[in-house]
Amino acid sequence: MKILGLTTVVLTGTLTFVNAGGKTPPPLPADSPRALQGIQSHAPAIQLPQKPVAISTHPPLVHLSQFVRDKGIFLFYSFNPSSPIYWHNFVPRSVINQAQTAGIKYLEVRVGYSNWVQIAPGAQETWFNQLLDLARSHDIRVIGWVVPYINNSSASTIRASLNGDWQVLNYLAHYKTPSGGRLSGLAMDLELGPLYFGGNTQALKQYVEGARTITGPSYPLIGIIPDPVRTGLTSQKGSAHYYPYNQIANYCNVLQPMAYWHEYYASSHFDYTPSYVENFIKDSITSTQEQDQNPSKPINLALQFFGNSLVGYPSETDLKTSLQSAQNDGAIGISAFQWHTLNSQYWTVLSEYSWRGN
Image 1: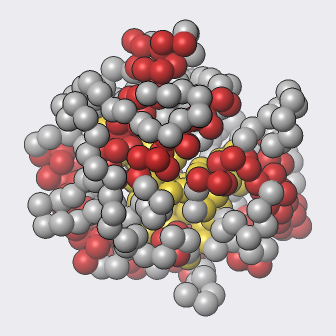
Image 2 (image 1 turned 180 degrees about the vertical axis):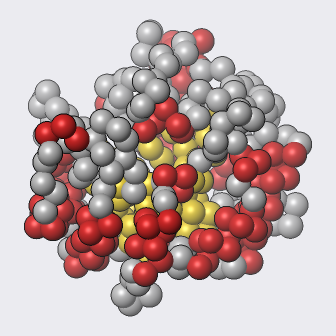
């Protein structure tokens, strides 16, 4: 496996629920939005073949940038039976009915973290297959959301991490239900925090290049990326805040910046005026276009439909403004983050907004 100048990805070994290199991410604060994601939930191991499955030559299920047009929503689940987001609690028919009622066109379902595939043999895989097949029968696309993780302890753990992350992509890109249902694409969560790439932008670039090599030229890939305005990240090499936006854009069909505007401590009583939200959304789109150096690259926004006790919760007015602004400023669609934090009011806002031209 070449690490620099990668042209071929060699996949070997077993995919497990242990993080590559044996390093376990630290626990999250209980109040953190990500603490509910179930990132550290143990999924049973899946034995992968010792050599890669042939790169798919099937045409994409939908046009490469159309697969995330209109409204979508992120969904993830836990393998912990005591968790409120335990997979068994998401009844496939109820999920699809609710999505269809709200006009949801695609689900971004988290199915991989590090070298864990979160589709476990047995009852859970049967459940996932039902969800995938039901969605397909109702013209709702299912996109596999994966969270790569790099153990930066040494060169060998970096290589092991990349190999494990690539195995997950390879497995999911070829995954089929017994009736032939497939994922409509993959969304890669390309963050720099300690539970992700740990600041290793070189590994991030290698991962994305390898993802395209593995899946082939016609497989739909989304790059879920930090919002340049909120984070201050830039594609300018040599900067202390460097992030390879433009190189990611070279390998992804769509970029999906995380436009989470509601971030000030609730105790500050910050006034999230409609103009503030409008400008935030507009800046998220335009700055992404500037940083990826490709103004024609399709952009889908991950929008904030969550909060916590530290920063409070977006208002219905905030959400309506963000949806309208996303479309007005050129996004091809939005994906609400996240299913289990949408209360009835949030669902109403999402349901009542119609994406024009679709």
